[in-house]
Image 1 (cartoon, rainbow, N blue to C red):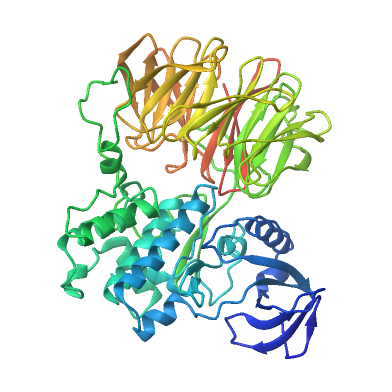
Image 2: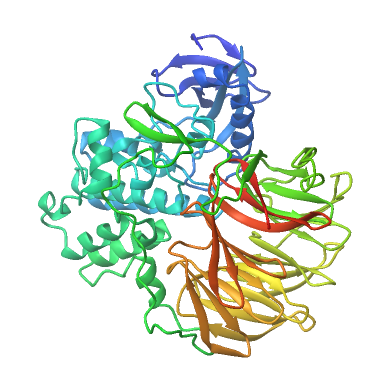
Length: 636
């Protein structure tokens, strides 16, 4: 888009052009306004080549405009001109962190203050399910008072999303700050941003990068297979403890990195003060937390198994028959997979497109519902015909807009309930028409839902609580349950909550709305299923599933999956576990506690359930987060 001084765009008038890759300088000529704002021209060939790119851009930008934080750059407005999108944001006159690094005109204490502010912004967004994907000094802007603002938050995903919208010459992230998993084209998590943040910390403290190269591919190879140069080689005045903190942040294994950017900064400040650095790694930091009361769970191993690290030397490659192309853009490799993979046992996997980043599934007895996290929508799919001719199986019966970032679903027999994390609401949806009815504000950001037969419960991972909600939206109870409740389920008598960071299992009396007991676990629980008598719990840090008798929780059976089980589901006969990192779903015999089948699923399966499709017909369904799809597998 060619912009010239004096040109008007809506209520904005161009004042001057600052640069090709930086905002235009413009006045806001709206009623009563004469403020200077910035405009970024987001014209990109991808928007012309892919018809859904602009819609995706609008949806995600609309979400980001409501991501309000003191250290995230405010987005005031956005729109289109001649089919090209643009963004209006606060005009920053203090330059960027990149400018300050290049000038060298600042003190270490000033740099640490900016890093503290960036850490707060990262954690805020991560807690709401949003990953930056392109953290680097140029995306940290500074105001006149010397405060940091994280910019371009989440826009990297808009442009480089699931349809490979990156054009030749651009990159999926910046190679100097790219995590190993991003270089391999794998699923990104908050730990991917933590890695880039650790690179940023390294550079602020030393003026150098942990890896040096003249090419993008050289950086990628270094991130994948080399150890970073000791920072004290470039900044010998730093205490030795700083190297330990950065080693955690720059770990090749995402699970070995800190969970939060502020945790890394707390460890860094402790190390710089001359004391021993507070451990920043997840295992070390959680071990230092106060023990949760209850019986400790122990199995045949006294110490949890070590994390399974991906080989550091593994370079991007085509590794399966489903990979049809290795695309390289500006030196960045990405494997493109096609739908319709088959399992190791020959079960046919059929995949259906849904919305943007599906995170939750629900079967209401007639149809399958999918919560599309970044799509801000629900997709309703038909399951009829799946067991006969196949006609109509997986047919999209409608997509329905809901509050932003829908994260969980529940069904009370009549009404479908959807929890939205950005709006902090729970809404009632008519399962027949898809119409959204009552919408209720919640006291905390919800992360999971359960129905106990009389009322709705939300688990609130950020607040460390669960909330009881009446059908009319009244808040009946708000109960502290630990540090980060990740899942909640009702067994007919009690509510069960797993506290991920607190490494515990909590039982709640739903009638009395109070905690009955808390059972300490020896590893980090991330998923849960009930089979009528026992609880099955997925452990994220050891890649195991344990079987737990709540009346005798001292000797659980353990099943080693070798990868983190993000979701569990018991279908009345078999236990199912989804390991998105491995791209696999496991069928487990609950009687023998053995894996009886392994099914390969493309697209990072993060949720699963089974649904009836007619007489003698049952199928497994998975929600595939990066594939923007659901997959179906017939159950023999």
